[in-house]
Length: 448
Ligand SMILES: Nc1nc2c(ncn2[C@@H]2O[C@H](COP(=O)(O)OP(=O)(O)OP(=O)(O)O)[C@@H](O)[C@H]2O)c(=O)[nH]1
Ligand SMILES: [Mg+2]
Image (tube, rainbow, N blue to C red; front, side, top):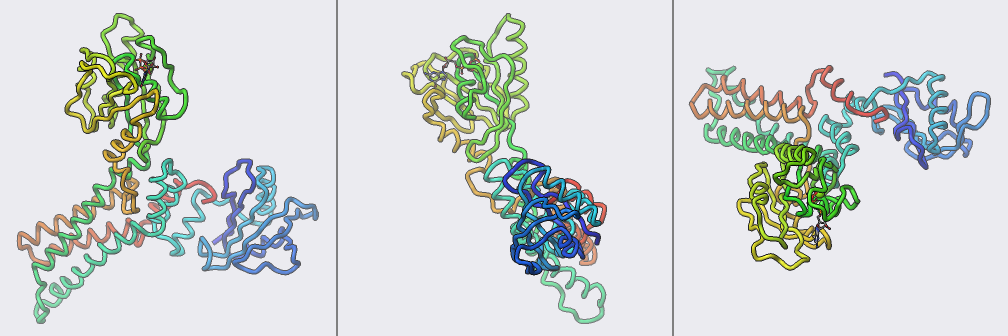
């Protein structure tokens, strides 16, 4: 493989930047620029300090270099990592010299792709790297780290191992019908298939949580005017994001912000208070509020606990969403005996957007509804490619279960099991088409 090089830390100003190189011959290439302070060749696998010099002998920067030998490196090839001072000018100059000496610019994800091709990681591990770098919540990062260290792979290998036992046995039956191969214990075969089916179904179902981890949950605050929606948004995001006044109908346009609540990433919209109005601008705002609620997976219906209920509260309580939490606000004020009493919500919490009381309870409710309470263990499907492969494997195993139950001959079942196995092999990358590998790694950044 040719020698490739790239900045791994992005072209930003920082204390340090790392320039990566990989490919046979990259040590020699690096040594034409890097002059170890010790005067001796750098030891592999150790950090060595030195100076990077341009061909005219002028210093470009001092740096710490790590030379690694195949296969003990990230890519499984000979690699060099140069930690230079984090100036985009310096990194550009170093790269220019490396390119002049014959290195090529690494493509997106090329280092990890080489690691995959050299068996240093499976595909779920490689994808976990993207998820880890992209993680916007601690839970998302934790899940990616668990996947990176083999969480999902271990689960899939376990299912794979259970299923591979069956073809071996069935093949013996099919290929040597006249020999006295012990017939498969039907009950045991069925149990193995059903266990695999259950585990694959659990993985299939985990894609919902994976989506929440990666993309977050679209959520909307809705409530009558002055219920305290904007105050709550500001409190939750810790910034003065939306205008708050005691004028009813302050918010007109929807205001969207991203925040983490109960470990769950919410894309939360503050909306105009719901009420009948003749004001054409406010009318549009109310329409937008209803549209935001309709598109939300989580509705935070805000009610004023210090004021008597009114028809607008009913209208708010009637908004449909897959998950609905009633938030009784203003508990710092004396409660009104005629305040709205919500019913039919997944949770009811009492808060004060003014003092912050009750926000922990709201966070817990959200965590419970979206699985944020349980730290993710990496056995979660986090992208469409994985989801599609798991679904295919599950469908194939389900067919095998059905066929076995119907007393179909083993050779027919065998085809389904093999299809399930090949879907799992695609998932881990044990057997996958080159164009699919290209496509996966093209989603990576340059330098990864
Ligand atoms: N005492 C008290 N006052 C609150 C609380 N939350 C909001 N308020 C006050 O209630 C008034 C309305 O608050 P907003 O946050 O603007 O209410 P809103 O629901 O966004 O109102 P609209 O945008 O008009 O629909 C302001 O004067 C807030 O200071 C609370 O928990 N306690
Ligand atoms: Mg408002």
